Length: 137
Image: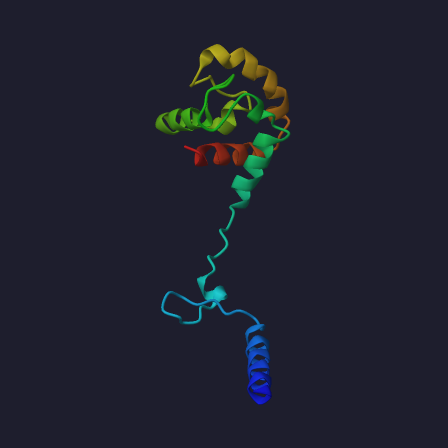
């Protein structure tokens, strides 16, 4: 009887030691799955869009009055992008003070106060803002 108990204890210890290693993930058929092979590739972020978003949410102060799909103080970005795209107009030119309001002329006076910030931006920054806004349409 002692021999059987010792054998069982050794067997249990051997099973425990072999199962405590790294767990291998398996598919529904029991085949090992390589985690690197199933990993989704990282989405590449367009630097122009990233810069535009940073400006929109930061020093451009655009996010104070504009949200992606909801009118707050100013029209939604989606509405702005849609109208500018339909009319072939440039948001970058407008925020540089070189264009008439196309979306909501009643908010133009409020927007003009922001031109101090947007006119001080570089041409590239204004293009980045435009690219970001147009990407949300």
